[in-house]
Image (tube, rainbow, N blue to C red; front, side, top):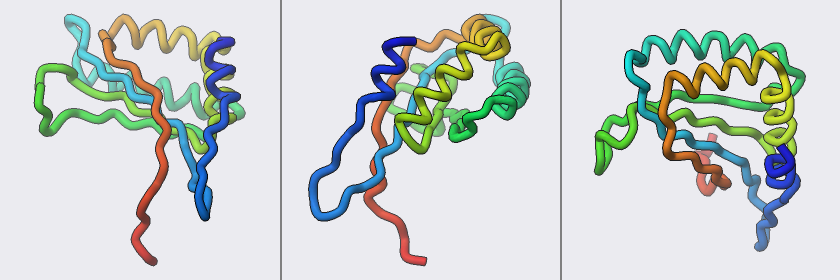
Length: 132
């Protein structure tokens, strides 16, 4: 957890005329473990939503994405993508989720259901937004 807190404490600075918001985005590239499939994952996400709703820090958004096209279509069955509005809320969210008995149990089951060999944390900077 100290490593997560250190990452969350690090602030990225943008230089230029105007600072752009930078948001942390986490990607898990996963394959299903034997005897599990998408319907099992989607049922498991319902439990995730209940746990996330019960935590004080609700600045997390999550998506399950399935490849439509990729240079290696067999690399992953799905991507779990999570995003926060700030590094501070990412650190707080990690601490709250994994320190909770329910969050730790949920993640243990997630690891049983999946093989996630790709795990990446990126910084996202919006560079275009259409005019309203």
